[in-house]
Image (tube, rainbow, N blue to C red; front, side):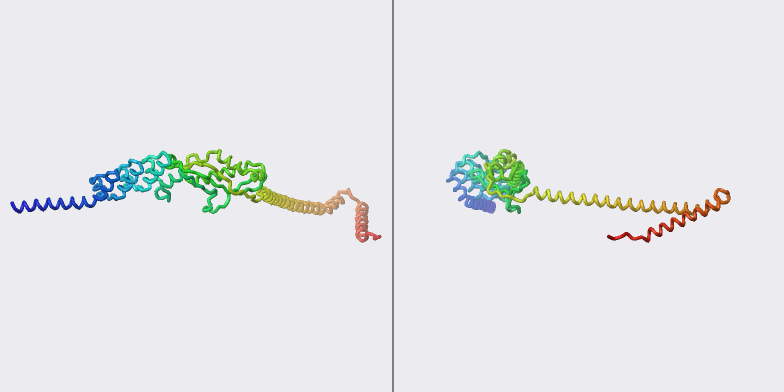
Length: 336
Protein backbone atom coordinates (compact mmCIF):
# COMPACT_ATOMS: atom_id res chain seq x y z
CA UNK A 1 0.00 0.00 0.00
CA UNK A 2 2.78 2.37 0.87
CA UNK A 3 4.38 1.81 -2.55
CA UNK A 4 1.13 2.65 -4.31
CA UNK A 5 0.80 5.72 -2.15
CA UNK A 6 4.27 6.93 -3.09
CA UNK A 7 3.57 6.25 -6.78
CA UNK A 8 0.38 8.30 -6.60
CA UNK A 9 2.16 11.12 -4.85
CA UNK A 10 4.91 11.04 -7.49
CA UNK A 11 2.40 11.17 -10.33
CA UNK A 12 0.55 14.07 -8.72
CA UNK A 13 3.82 15.87 -8.07
CA UNK A 14 4.95 15.33 -11.66
CA UNK A 15 1.63 16.58 -12.98
CA UNK A 16 1.81 19.62 -10.74
CA UNK A 17 5.38 20.26 -11.84
CA UNK A 18 4.36 20.15 -15.52
CA UNK A 19 1.44 22.47 -14.84
CA UNK A 20 3.76 24.84 -13.03
CA UNK A 21 6.19 24.88 -15.95
CA UNK A 22 3.38 25.51 -18.42
CA UNK A 23 1.87 28.17 -16.17
CA UNK A 24 5.12 30.04 -15.70
CA UNK A 25 5.95 29.71 -19.42
CA UNK A 26 2.73 31.39 -20.55
CA UNK A 27 1.88 33.38 -17.43
CA UNK A 28 3.76 36.50 -18.49
CA UNK A 29 2.17 36.51 -21.94
CA UNK A 30 -1.27 35.75 -20.51
CA UNK A 31 -0.91 38.52 -17.93
CA UNK A 32 0.23 41.03 -20.57
CA UNK A 33 -2.80 40.24 -22.71
CA UNK A 34 -5.15 40.40 -19.72
CA UNK A 35 -3.82 43.76 -18.60
CA UNK A 36 -4.19 45.14 -22.15
CA UNK A 37 -7.86 44.02 -22.26
CA UNK A 38 -6.99 41.59 -25.05
CA UNK A 39 -7.28 38.31 -23.14
CA UNK A 40 -6.10 35.02 -24.61
CA UNK A 41 -6.65 31.90 -22.56
CA UNK A 42 -3.74 29.72 -21.50
CA UNK A 43 -5.45 26.79 -23.19
CA UNK A 44 -5.29 28.60 -26.54
CA UNK A 45 -1.66 29.42 -25.90
CA UNK A 46 -0.90 25.76 -25.27
CA UNK A 47 -2.71 24.85 -28.48
CA UNK A 48 -0.67 27.44 -30.41
CA UNK A 49 2.52 26.04 -28.97
CA UNK A 50 1.55 22.51 -29.99
CA UNK A 51 0.79 23.77 -33.53
CA UNK A 52 4.20 25.50 -33.59
CA UNK A 53 2.66 28.94 -33.80
CA UNK A 54 4.65 31.72 -32.06
CA UNK A 55 2.43 32.62 -29.12
CA UNK A 56 4.11 35.95 -28.48
CA UNK A 57 3.59 37.08 -32.10
CA UNK A 58 -0.15 36.32 -32.05
CA UNK A 59 -0.74 37.83 -28.61
CA UNK A 60 1.30 40.97 -29.31
CA UNK A 61 -0.54 41.63 -32.58
CA UNK A 62 -3.89 41.08 -30.88
CA UNK A 63 -2.89 43.58 -28.20
CA UNK A 64 -1.82 46.07 -30.89
CA UNK A 65 -5.15 45.70 -32.69
CA UNK A 66 -7.23 46.02 -29.52
CA UNK A 67 -5.32 49.09 -28.38
CA UNK A 68 -6.01 50.64 -31.79
CA UNK A 69 -9.73 50.00 -31.35
CA UNK A 70 -9.99 46.86 -33.49
CA UNK A 71 -11.41 43.65 -32.06
CA UNK A 72 -9.28 41.03 -33.80
CA UNK A 73 -9.49 37.58 -32.24
CA UNK A 74 -6.51 35.30 -31.85
CA UNK A 75 -7.97 32.44 -33.90
CA UNK A 76 -8.07 34.37 -37.24
CA UNK A 77 -4.54 35.63 -36.60
CA UNK A 78 -3.34 32.09 -35.96
CA UNK A 79 -5.12 30.81 -39.08
CA UNK A 80 -3.51 33.51 -41.22
CA UNK A 81 -0.08 32.67 -39.83
CA UNK A 82 -0.58 28.98 -40.62
CA UNK A 83 -1.61 29.97 -44.17
CA UNK A 84 1.78 31.61 -44.63
CA UNK A 85 0.71 35.21 -44.16
CA UNK A 86 2.38 38.07 -42.35
CA UNK A 87 0.27 38.74 -39.26
CA UNK A 88 2.08 41.95 -38.31
CA UNK A 89 1.56 43.55 -41.73
CA UNK A 90 -2.13 42.63 -41.71
CA UNK A 91 -2.71 44.19 -38.29
CA UNK A 92 -0.76 47.34 -39.13
CA UNK A 93 -2.62 47.64 -42.44
CA UNK A 94 -5.98 47.33 -40.65
CA UNK A 95 -4.97 50.02 -38.18
CA UNK A 96 -3.74 52.36 -40.93
CA UNK A 97 -6.92 51.86 -42.97
CA UNK A 98 -9.12 52.43 -39.93
CA UNK A 99 -7.33 55.65 -39.00
CA UNK A 100 -7.56 56.91 -42.60
CA UNK A 101 -11.25 56.06 -42.88
CA UNK A 102 -10.70 53.42 -45.56
CA UNK A 103 -13.02 50.42 -45.60
CA UNK A 104 -10.89 47.30 -45.15
CA UNK A 105 -11.98 44.18 -43.31
CA UNK A 106 -9.77 41.44 -41.93
CA UNK A 107 -10.51 38.88 -44.65
CA UNK A 108 -9.74 41.38 -47.42
CA UNK A 109 -6.48 42.34 -45.72
CA UNK A 110 -5.48 38.68 -45.41
CA UNK A 111 -6.32 38.06 -49.08
CA UNK A 112 -4.17 41.00 -50.18
CA UNK A 113 -1.33 39.87 -47.93
CA UNK A 114 -1.35 36.35 -49.38
CA UNK A 115 -1.69 37.67 -52.94
CA UNK A 116 1.36 39.92 -52.58
CA UNK A 117 3.49 37.22 -50.98
CA UNK A 118 6.77 36.82 -52.86
CA UNK A 119 6.21 39.91 -55.02
CA UNK A 120 8.18 42.35 -52.90
CA UNK A 121 4.98 44.18 -51.97
CA UNK A 122 2.88 44.00 -48.83
CA UNK A 123 -0.66 44.73 -47.75
CA UNK A 124 0.72 47.53 -45.59
CA UNK A 125 2.30 49.13 -48.65
CA UNK A 126 -1.02 48.81 -50.50
CA UNK A 127 -2.86 50.63 -47.72
CA UNK A 128 -0.18 53.31 -47.49
CA UNK A 129 -0.35 53.83 -51.26
CA UNK A 130 -4.10 54.16 -50.96
CA UNK A 131 -3.60 56.83 -48.30
CA UNK A 132 -0.57 58.55 -49.86
CA UNK A 133 -0.66 58.23 -53.69
CA UNK A 134 2.56 57.24 -55.44
CA UNK A 135 4.08 58.50 -58.68
CA UNK A 136 4.97 56.09 -61.50
CA UNK A 137 7.35 57.11 -64.28
CA UNK A 138 6.20 56.32 -67.80
CA UNK A 139 8.19 54.80 -69.31
CA UNK A 140 9.97 53.02 -66.50
CA UNK A 141 13.72 53.82 -66.77
CA UNK A 142 14.50 50.35 -65.44
CA UNK A 143 13.04 48.86 -68.63
CA UNK A 144 15.73 50.58 -70.71
CA UNK A 145 13.62 53.27 -72.37
CA UNK A 146 13.88 56.94 -71.49
CA UNK A 147 10.93 58.34 -73.46
CA UNK A 148 7.67 57.37 -75.10
CA UNK A 149 8.05 58.01 -78.83
CA UNK A 150 5.16 58.93 -81.11
CA UNK A 151 4.78 60.39 -84.60
CA UNK A 152 2.43 63.25 -85.49
CA UNK A 153 0.54 63.30 -88.78
CA UNK A 154 3.17 65.59 -90.34
CA UNK A 155 5.78 62.86 -89.88
CA UNK A 156 7.75 64.54 -87.08
CA UNK A 157 8.56 62.37 -84.06
CA UNK A 158 7.77 63.52 -80.52
CA UNK A 159 9.41 62.14 -77.37
CA UNK A 160 7.43 62.35 -74.14
CA UNK A 161 8.10 61.62 -70.47
CA UNK A 162 5.07 61.29 -68.22
CA UNK A 163 4.42 60.84 -64.51
CA UNK A 164 1.33 58.96 -63.43
CA UNK A 165 -0.06 59.54 -59.94
CA UNK A 166 -1.93 56.49 -58.66
CA UNK A 167 -3.33 55.12 -55.45
CA UNK A 168 -4.18 51.57 -54.54
CA UNK A 169 -7.71 50.37 -55.17
CA UNK A 170 -8.08 47.83 -52.37
CA UNK A 171 -11.24 46.25 -53.78
CA UNK A 172 -9.38 45.39 -57.01
CA UNK A 173 -5.96 44.78 -55.50
CA UNK A 174 -6.40 41.01 -55.58
CA UNK A 175 -6.49 39.93 -59.22
CA UNK A 176 -6.03 43.44 -60.59
CA UNK A 177 -3.33 44.37 -63.10
CA UNK A 178 -0.07 45.77 -61.75
CA UNK A 179 2.02 48.88 -62.39
CA UNK A 180 3.45 47.43 -65.61
CA UNK A 181 -0.04 47.40 -67.11
CA UNK A 182 -0.60 51.02 -66.08
CA UNK A 183 2.68 52.05 -67.73
CA UNK A 184 1.86 50.11 -70.91
CA UNK A 185 -1.63 51.59 -71.19
CA UNK A 186 -0.41 55.12 -70.55
CA UNK A 187 2.29 54.67 -73.19
CA UNK A 188 -0.26 53.40 -75.68
CA UNK A 189 -2.55 56.34 -74.94
CA UNK A 190 0.27 58.88 -75.35
CA UNK A 191 1.33 57.39 -78.70
CA UNK A 192 -2.29 57.49 -79.88
CA UNK A 193 -2.72 61.10 -78.74
CA UNK A 194 0.46 62.18 -80.54
CA UNK A 195 -0.60 60.34 -83.68
CA UNK A 196 -3.95 62.15 -83.74
CA UNK A 197 -2.24 65.57 -83.74
CA UNK A 198 -1.99 67.19 -87.19
CA UNK A 199 1.41 68.66 -86.39
CA UNK A 200 4.09 68.20 -83.78
CA UNK A 201 3.65 71.89 -82.97
CA UNK A 202 0.21 71.15 -81.54
CA UNK A 203 1.80 68.72 -79.09
CA UNK A 204 4.49 71.21 -78.08
CA UNK A 205 1.96 74.01 -77.65
CA UNK A 206 -0.56 71.98 -75.62
CA UNK A 207 1.12 69.07 -73.80
CA UNK A 208 -1.82 68.95 -71.39
CA UNK A 209 -3.93 67.83 -74.33
CA UNK A 210 -2.12 64.50 -74.18
CA UNK A 211 -2.74 64.02 -70.46
CA UNK A 212 -6.43 64.95 -70.75
CA UNK A 213 -6.95 62.62 -73.71
CA UNK A 214 -5.20 59.71 -72.02
CA UNK A 215 -6.88 60.28 -68.66
CA UNK A 216 -10.32 60.27 -70.30
CA UNK A 217 -9.81 56.72 -71.61
CA UNK A 218 -10.20 55.07 -68.20
CA UNK A 219 -6.89 53.25 -68.34
CA UNK A 220 -7.15 52.06 -64.73
CA UNK A 221 -9.96 49.63 -65.55
CA UNK A 222 -9.39 46.17 -64.02
CA UNK A 223 -6.14 47.27 -62.40
CA UNK A 224 -5.09 47.38 -58.77
CA UNK A 225 -4.73 51.16 -58.94
CA UNK A 226 -6.80 54.26 -59.51
CA UNK A 227 -5.19 56.88 -61.75
CA UNK A 228 -5.47 60.33 -60.20
CA UNK A 229 -3.52 62.35 -62.75
CA UNK A 230 -1.19 62.05 -65.72
CA UNK A 231 1.37 64.84 -65.95
CA UNK A 232 3.66 65.43 -68.93
CA UNK A 233 7.12 65.96 -67.47
CA UNK A 234 9.04 66.57 -70.70
CA UNK A 235 8.36 66.90 -74.44
CA UNK A 236 11.10 66.84 -77.09
CA UNK A 237 11.08 66.86 -80.88
CA UNK A 238 12.40 63.65 -82.38
CA UNK A 239 13.48 62.63 -85.86
CA UNK A 240 11.63 63.38 -89.08
CA UNK A 241 10.20 59.90 -89.42
CA UNK A 242 8.05 60.86 -92.40
CA UNK A 243 11.05 62.06 -94.41
CA UNK A 244 12.98 58.91 -93.57
CA UNK A 245 10.09 56.73 -94.67
CA UNK A 246 9.72 58.68 -97.91
CA UNK A 247 13.45 58.37 -98.58
CA UNK A 248 13.36 54.65 -97.96
CA UNK A 249 10.27 54.34 -100.18
CA UNK A 250 11.98 56.29 -102.96
CA UNK A 251 15.04 54.05 -102.69
CA UNK A 252 12.82 50.99 -102.83
CA UNK A 253 10.98 52.36 -105.89
CA UNK A 254 14.34 53.05 -107.53
CA UNK A 255 15.45 49.48 -106.99
CA UNK A 256 12.17 48.18 -108.37
CA UNK A 257 12.52 50.39 -111.46
CA UNK A 258 16.11 49.21 -111.95
CA UNK A 259 15.00 45.62 -111.68
CA UNK A 260 12.24 46.17 -114.23
CA UNK A 261 14.69 47.94 -116.59
CA UNK A 262 17.08 45.03 -116.28
CA UNK A 263 14.25 42.67 -117.17
CA UNK A 264 13.41 44.76 -120.25
CA UNK A 265 17.10 44.91 -121.27
CA UNK A 266 17.42 41.16 -120.96
CA UNK A 267 14.27 40.74 -123.04
CA UNK A 268 15.66 43.09 -125.71
CA UNK A 269 18.93 41.16 -125.83
CA UNK A 270 17.00 37.94 -126.22
CA UNK A 271 14.94 39.42 -129.08
CA UNK A 272 18.12 40.68 -130.75
CA UNK A 273 19.69 37.25 -130.56
CA UNK A 274 16.53 35.74 -131.96
CA UNK A 275 16.51 38.19 -134.89
CA UNK A 276 20.16 37.44 -135.62
CA UNK A 277 19.35 33.76 -135.73
CA UNK A 278 16.47 34.42 -138.12
CA UNK A 279 18.77 36.56 -140.33
CA UNK A 280 21.28 33.75 -140.53
CA UNK A 281 18.48 31.38 -141.38
CA UNK A 282 17.26 33.64 -144.21
CA UNK A 283 20.80 34.04 -145.55
CA UNK A 284 21.15 30.29 -145.62
CA UNK A 285 17.95 30.06 -147.62
CA UNK A 286 19.26 32.72 -150.07
CA UNK A 287 22.51 30.80 -150.54
CA UNK A 288 20.50 27.65 -151.07
CA UNK A 289 18.36 29.41 -153.67
CA UNK A 290 21.43 30.85 -155.45
CA UNK A 291 22.89 27.37 -155.65
CA UNK A 292 19.86 26.31 -157.70
CA UNK A 293 20.37 29.07 -160.35
CA UNK A 294 23.06 27.25 -162.42
CA UNK A 295 20.97 24.11 -162.47
CA UNK A 296 17.95 26.10 -163.58
CA UNK A 297 20.00 27.74 -166.34
CA UNK A 298 21.22 24.34 -167.54
CA UNK A 299 17.64 23.10 -167.62
CA UNK A 300 16.68 26.23 -169.60
CA UNK A 301 19.47 25.57 -172.15
CA UNK A 302 18.37 21.98 -172.59
CA UNK A 303 14.75 22.92 -172.99
CA UNK A 304 15.54 25.77 -175.42
CA UNK A 305 14.09 28.49 -173.20
CA UNK A 306 17.48 30.23 -172.92
CA UNK A 307 19.76 30.99 -175.87
CA UNK A 308 23.44 31.64 -176.02
CA UNK A 309 22.91 35.36 -176.62
CA UNK A 310 20.71 35.59 -173.57
CA UNK A 311 23.45 34.01 -171.55
CA UNK A 312 26.07 36.43 -172.95
CA UNK A 313 23.88 39.44 -172.15
CA UNK A 314 23.39 38.17 -168.60
CA UNK A 315 27.13 37.79 -168.12
CA UNK A 316 27.68 41.32 -169.47
CA UNK A 317 25.14 42.68 -167.01
CA UNK A 318 26.86 40.85 -164.14
CA UNK A 319 30.27 42.18 -165.21
CA UNK A 320 28.92 45.71 -165.54
CA UNK A 321 27.31 45.48 -162.10
CA UNK A 322 30.53 44.18 -160.55
CA UNK A 323 32.50 47.03 -162.16
CA UNK A 324 30.07 49.64 -160.86
CA UNK A 325 30.23 48.22 -157.35
CA UNK A 326 34.03 48.24 -157.51
CA UNK A 327 34.10 51.86 -158.67
CA UNK A 328 31.58 52.91 -156.03
CA UNK A 329 33.61 51.22 -153.32
CA UNK A 330 36.89 52.88 -154.35
CA UNK A 331 35.52 56.44 -154.39
CA UNK A 332 36.18 58.61 -151.33
CA UNK A 333 33.98 61.48 -150.18
CA UNK A 334 35.40 64.90 -151.04
CA UNK A 335 36.49 67.16 -148.18
CA UNK A 336 35.80 70.87 -148.29
